[in-house]
Length: 196
Image (cartoon, rainbow, N blue to C red):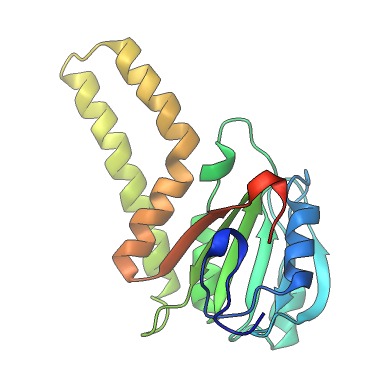
């Protein structure tokens, strides 16, 4: 597929979603350990696949390669019971890494869902600004719950919403933060568990 071609779910990207990238994402989608792979804009894999633990993967090898600028990093998010598969999006560290290293894009996969954030035309925001934006977003959500408690709203209603928020917060935060900075953010879902 050529640059700007279609990825899983028919989404258009400013880089090639190669067969190799799709295979990597399919094989790691439900892996209990986080891993990462680096690709160039044409979808060619650069270097080794890095293996981590159930919470993170050390990207030092990618950093030391000197090839991060304009690369596409894709990684998996191991399943977490508290977060819905289709909402287990980017962490503040994921987007800050993309900004700090001027990636063309960063992707995260979990189950049948792939999240993609592409560098804006004007460039990534400062990585510390990304962290601050995530923190402000989370504080806004927490303050909203506190306000509801203070107003005397029924605890059962607040508890139900708290559970929903916990399941969807990563995606909701990513949408808010990427919108704030003009970052192209997509969430695609493969049909029948197969990525195309």
